[in-house]
Image (cartoon, rainbow, N blue to C red; front, side, top):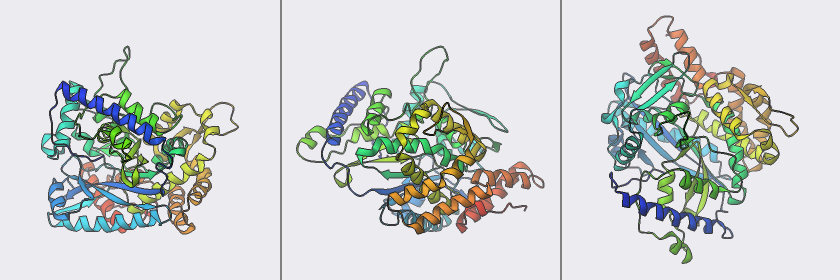
Length: 496
């Protein structure tokens, strides 16, 4: 998804040519998915970790290119804003201790990147939204100087035709108007890639959609923006609104947002999602390559589907389909809703819970879905982001008669044995299951997520300090705790 481009302006002819190539790509993918054995290699787990670079005072440090130059690591990439980086972690087969090895890799890479940042007077922080952000940290001066970002921002602004408006409610509601999309760079996430057999893609995807609100609430780590106390996971409305190019009017139709939870339960397979992205969303990065995907496929090759992959990178589903030409071609589900931080152990535990729940729920997914119309699944997603563990969600069962809300906390407690069984079903050892789901059980027992810890800590600090100073003191403790890799459910509340 991090493909770079070498052009920033486009003509109408470019969009026409690109649309033609998209149709070629879709035809090739449809044919590829019917080939015996396609995508049926070893299932695997991969991830991408986005992070902040901060200075000694806890403010963003615009040094991502400098750290990239020092690192010389092809797995490290630049993000939209100059104080963000992304590390693409090595994927592991499910029979190769994928969760444990991913945690170890994160710890190793964070230590290395932090040492590089220190050479530039900085540090690495992993948190959904940096609590010490200021409005001066956004704008053209903060954007990474890459063709992809210049083109993306230009196209989004051109289609918006006005400022980007952000309205988020909460204890201290916020209302902003931004001239560009750099506010999107306030969000950092831990994105999970799960390789799926095409034959079970629809059921697995639907199960992940069903489980995502539960894990999002438990993983929440972004309760503030510019000092305002907002949602437990403020990234969700912020990302959606900060790049929304639509001008909505309740009395007229409008296209679906490019950031969304989905448009319905998946009925057949992954092709449905790829096709929907082409049919429902106009291209904004129309850069073509020379490959004729159908010709490559007809000559027994594996097409790269460059145009389709580029287009997918500008349609931001929270659970997004991914095509990869590696290993003779395969498909994955990219889970994009979970925040960065608070610790590597917490992030990997969130991933284990999400995949365990999805695999456990998949067994009866087609009996569960009739009890939850899709708009209620979307409702669950936003209520989980807003209220965290305090949310009440509509949860289905196979014998229900009508929909009812239940406390999210109770739903999670009841489903933990199912998550254990789901991980066991895909070959995850008891040692791994116990380590990561044990973290989840402890977090539920304490009732403390990253967002809750931040809220509690700010409340205590403000008994002695001004709000601005409290945010900085809280960040310092957050960074120290994050480096310890002690799970957030065990963090104490600072009173410094």
